[in-house]
Length: 220
Image (tube, rainbow, N blue to C red; front, side, top):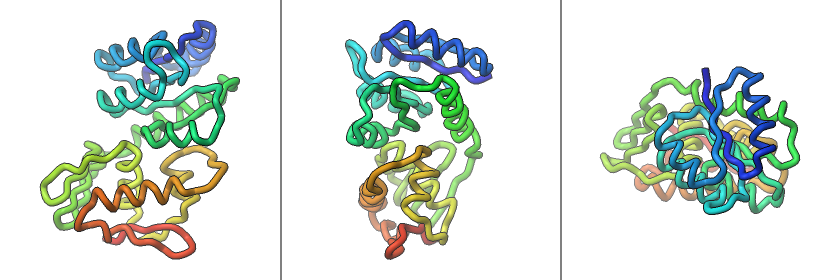
């Protein structure tokens, strides 16, 4: 049975989310702020963290950044703020989904199921390309024996590209399958992540090829 952590300073929201989570077969724990959430993630292995943005002591964005350092756990962000900048900032931090308040509890549970299933379906796989080694299950990348420092979303993107080697992938396809949300706006976030990936891959940056007028592909 999957276990989720519900983090929100509003008790009524925690109760609503908990009620629907239990109805969907999940075990739940609750935290009132980001500091408490960090402590609980350190002690317990969760399958998903539902995290509010606006909280006392430690906001959701800061908490997400720290939680991702502690464990590679899927994070769904809740926020009354729907500006594109906030969403993009969340995804840059490695957020797996972003839900705007007020939200449908049923839809939230559907999104929880998607991120948990996505997290679990990746079987152990190590892809080697000379000195470039991509460990999909261990979520690590080494370049000529040195571990590359990458954000969770950069790793997600690289794994996806490598698993679809030699296939031209559009920006929209990458947004849909890697970010996992309906993206309304420009697709420059993909270009930004590709740029960072190439920088981190060093001598293997040319593995990621630009497909003019479409997107990108990984050449094995």
